[in-house]
Structure formats: C-alpha cells, structure tokens
Amino acid sequence: MIGIPTRTKWIVGLVWLLALTAGLAWGWSRGLSTPQILVAVHQVVSTHPLAPLVFIVIYTLRAFTFFPAMFLTIAAGSLFGFWIGLVATLFGENLSAHTAYGIARFFGTSNPDSDEAQQRLAPLRRALRMHAFPTVLTLRASYLPFDLVNFGCGLLRVPWPGFALGTLIGLLPPMLTFVSFGASVEFEAFTANFDDFRPANLFNETQLLVSAALMAASALIVWFAQAHRRHLTRR
Image 1 (cartoon, rainbow, N blue to C red):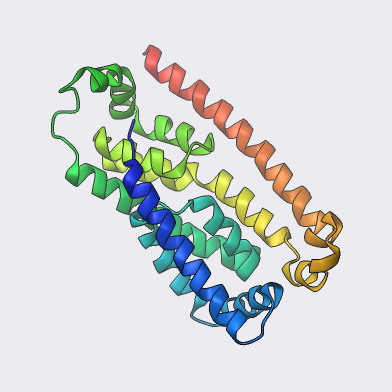
Image 2: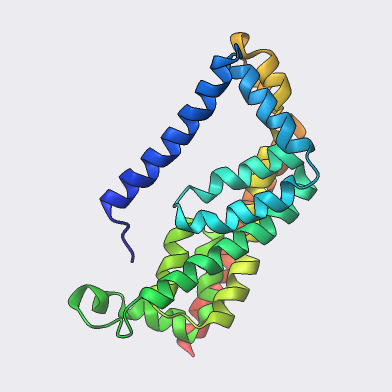
C-alpha cells in the first residue's frame, strides 16, 4: 500500500540510535549504571506534571519519524499508569494518525489508479471509499501496522469522516491492550533486581490478565466489524 524508502529508514534509525547513545554516554560519564539511568529517566518523566502533555506532542510528531507507535503506547501505561496513560495515548495516537493521513493525502497522487500497481488496490480503495468507517474500523482493530493504515488511507483518499470515526473507535482495542500491558510492568521492581532478572519481577499479574482479556475482546470486535463490512458490501 505504501513503502518507506530504505534510505529514510536508515536515516531515522541512525538518528534514534545516536540520541540513545548520547543519553547513555551522558549518564555513564556521571558514574551512573544503565539501570540507574533508566530509573532516573522513568522517575523524572512519570512525576513531572507536564509530562502527559509533552507525551501527546511527541506522539503527534512521531508521524514524521516512523518510530513504532506501539512502543509509545506501552510506555504511556508504564509512565503514567493505566488511566492517565490511556487519555494521553487517546489524544496522541489519534493526532498522530491524522498527521500521517494528512501528509499522505497532501503529497499523494491525485489519480490513485494511474499505474498497474495502484490498480491492484482498486477493490480495497472502493471498499474504503464506499464503506470507510467499517473498513477502517476492521483494519485498526486487527492490529495492522499503525503507519501502514494511516499513510495508506491518505494515499487512497479515504473520506476523512469515515477515517476519523473508524480510527477513534478502532484504535481503542489495541490501545487499551497495550496501555494495560505497559501499566502491568513493574518498572522499579524490575530495575531494582536488574542483575537477578526474573519474569515474575517484571509484571503485575492482575494487570497482565486484564491485557489478555482486552486482547480477546478486540478479537470479537474485529469479527463483528468484518461481518458488518461483508453485509454492507453485499447490499
């Protein structure tokens, strides 16, 4: 549906690697170990009153960096807890989706069927245009790559209202699942026993069970959305 140039991937990956290396080097130069650096960053971010707002801005701008959205969603749960993490992710992820959609729609071709490769996508494009909401809802709830759906819908010129509503509702199942998973991570307990790591030290079992239940619920939503879309396409 959409391809990101290999050179762009390498450049973005290199920038993230350099930023991470610089942060670790700064901590090491002050005599901090890697676990201590992680704990310090986690404590500063999770306790700062403006951190959720900064997180929303970072999530929105993430569309320009191709950084995996799933990691930010999990981080929200770990940093802010389930409820605040969910609200921050709800705003950030939707804004990021609309940013990527707008970029693709603005820079995309005005004639999506102009070559043979795009003509193969014609059935999907028709489904997205005629039944945008249930189709986008299904794509979202199916845990497909976040940016693939965003940029793809923009390039295929999916009507914005259907994209917006399908994104808002369809993102909830994976969002709830990954934020809950992040909230289940006992980060401080994990770093306190970094040298003697055990899986039991990493997760809150109750929250982890909630994540599993949410994933099962999202599977049911996908099934109902697909059934509804098939019903619409027969009409």
